[in-house]
Amino acid sequence: MEESFEISLTYKNAELVFPAVLQRVGYSYRIVVSMGETLICFEPDEERNFRVVMMPDQSERAMERIDKALLAVLHDRLVELLR
Image 1: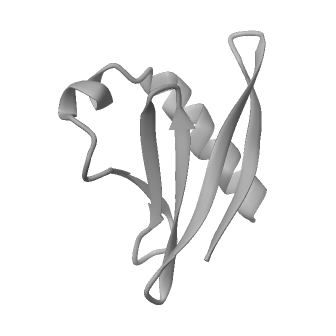
Image 2 (image 1 turned 180 degrees about the vertical axis):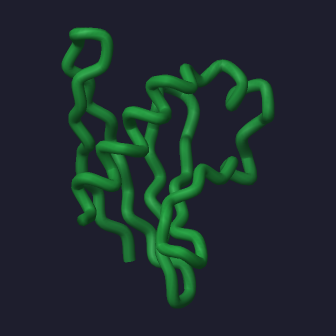
């Protein structure tokens, strides 16, 4: 079962909205966020913190092009929404 939602945030004085999908994976879940043409996967780790995992069909080059500061803001916003 998948559930779609949007994550809105402010980054460099711009309001951004990213489409996301909550996916159940076995007894856990992951949140896949679309950042342009790149899909970013957030999974909870053993300590219930989120880690970024590369999607199987994404190239490492696609991940290198992602703005790391924006990714950090997106991570923090996701944690804020889920707590």
